[in-house]
Image 1 (tube, one colour):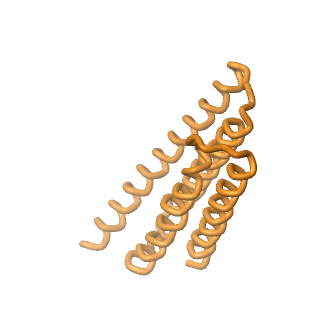
Image 2 (tube, rainbow, N blue to C red):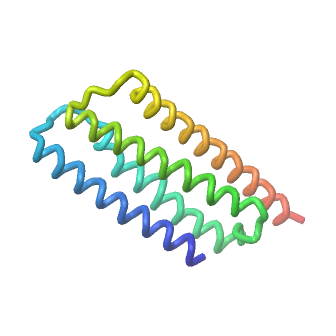
Amino acid sequence: MKRLLNTSFFYTILALASGLFYREFTHAQQFTSWTPLSVMHTHSFALGTAVFLLLLILEKTFAILQNKKFRSFYYLYNFGLLTTLLMLGIRGVTDVLEIQLSSGMNAAISGTAGVAHIVLTLAIIQLFILLSDVVKNEHK
């Protein structure tokens, strides 16, 4: 349970830091358009802090950490989320600094973000399979 709490706390710090960075960086650059940096904050809070707090409640209720599938879910989900946040940050900084990316670099950023979203999707599917197992075993 401590791991879930610590993970949630990590994403809270990341959310706060990314929100502060977005505000100060765009202000310093006098940038007023939309940038992916603006959603790093909310992605970190919703997909990081909130999800792991909900998992903490599910652990208390169903002991989900005992399920064999939890470990792979945990690592897949964190990898997908951290990669997604990293790509939001990279894309946002290049937007704010108006860096002209080569088509290859642009495709690499988009492709990596896409793969990260696929990994997140697979992790969420695995979580639902895990929860289905846990609920099914509760009724036995």
